Length: 86
Image (cartoon, rainbow, N blue to C red; front, side, top):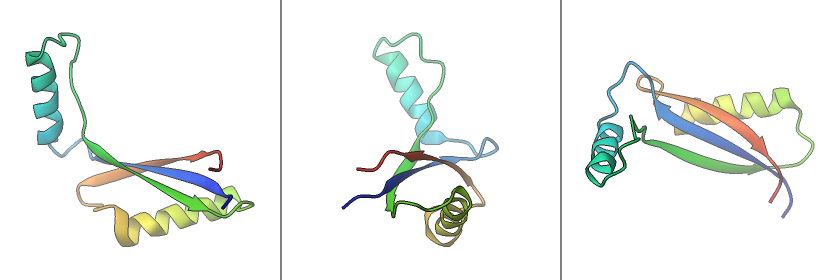
């Protein structure tokens, strides 16, 4: 099946403490990765959409998917990228 992959990256807002990210950063430092300053834990969702959709249509699709299901907008934000089809 051909199409275009839309990668949605969901992360906690900067105003929300990312406890998992802090734990990951601390653990990496404990393992000897001294260059790690911080880490952020998020989610990635890849959605395959049909070819030929306009940028505006993809913007609206992502906005609606995030609002209705993928993102808790009180504590999370998102960004997305349009990748090549798979």
